[in-house]
Amino acid sequence: MDLNFNREEEEFRQKVRRFLEENMPKSGLVGTGREGREDKAWLEKSKAWQRKLHEAGYVALAWPKEYGGQAMDPVRQTIVNDEMVRANAPYLAGGSGLGMLGPTLISWGTEEQKKRYLPKILTAEEIWCQGYSEPGSGSDLASLRTRAEIVGDEFVVNGQKVWTSGAQYADMMFCLVRTDPEAPKHRGISYILIDMHTPGITVRPLVQMTGDRGFNEVFFDNVRVPRKNLVGKLNEGWIVANATLFHERNMLGSATGSAQRFNRLLAIAKKIKRGGRALTEDPVFRQRLADLEIRVEAMRYHSLRQLTDQIRGKNPGVEGWINKLVGTELNHDLATAAMEAMGDYSMLSRDDGAALDHGYWPYEWMFSLGLVIGGGTSHIQKNIIAERGLKMPKSR
Ligand SMILES: Cc1cc2nc3c(=O)[nH]c(=O)nc-3n(C[C@H](O)[C@H](O)[C@H](O)COP(=O)(O)OP(=O)(O)OC[C@H]3O[C@@H](n4cnc5c(N)ncnc54)[C@H](O)[C@@H]3O)c2cc1C
Image (cartoon, rainbow, N blue to C red; front, side):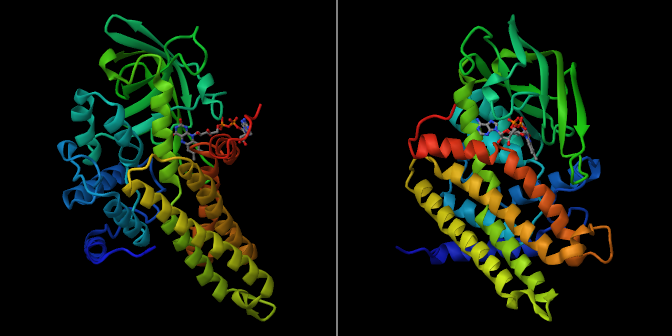
């Protein structure tokens, strides 16, 4: 088994690295890119950054050529993703379209939908949000109640979504609605595309514990959506919804991202002293670092295994859920270790001049906790892995 990238791939990596060094925005977009998302100036800068990446050929490399992709093998996309994380490149405003809706439409969309939506996802001309969760329907997503009635050539949508990330600036939403209230709960759901500028939509930002306004409540009051915006078959949206969830889970855990965080943790542990010596010399903390590094390394091999499966065209299975479960928990554990290492200094945020490591860790600790929940909580991932991966009896 050869776990190395070949010569052409390494040359490609160097090219991407140089591009990022020369072109990455130097100001106005923070590295993690998670802050200030309610700010219009941030949005415009983030869109411009995505356009630049797209023009250079570094966005959605594996998408088919007829929809603006390059039909490349998944290795190139992985290399670009890794280099973006390594360079601490800003988050892309069009991330939900690129990572979730785009791949779903490629498999499930009509030709008209693919031609209409995919090119504008690539150029960040249209920003998407995900309208799945509702009050009372998170883990039990299939219990959702937002209703869409068919009237002539349109759906008329009424109801409420919640925790909708980026809805405050999104142009479009991929949304789950109940189209047959009489059917068993997984059956009467449809997957539709809603223009967020349609009359009857109200978006109310929610403030997260990080202080960001990352997600929102979205209310629908007789919102009219053309029938041609249905993806997949009427009342059979659950299967399309799961395709999107798979892509989302894959997006949320990045082995390179965890390795970056580990290195950052190591760097502060070398500087912080306990009992007259650096934390890296403290036997108890060393044990903890070793445990975390083993998990980071295991995730690296796991992601290589997933990549191999993708190259071989094997259907993505339980590995995606493992990626989400282990990757997001690992990131939170890395942040927890850093917070404990910093002791009282862990209280100081980015605005405080005395904060260690520029106040990165308190923010990261709170944000990474959100990702353990978003995209399906750890408990739910464990249930799925047990039932579908290990074929254990269903939980009640
Ligand atoms: C940062 C962030 C961003 C998000 N962005 C979006 C978005 O853009 N669009 C969107 O639609 N949603 C979004 N969400 C919502 C997310 O999908 C839900 O929060 C998640 O699915 C959990 O649902 P819930 O919050 O209703 O919790 P609940 O389902 O009420 O769960 C509460 C607790 O009970 C546990 N639990 C529930 N059922 C079971 C079970 N069967 N077995 C074991 N334990 C169980 C859960 O693990 C959890 O600990 C986001 C959430 C976060 C945190």
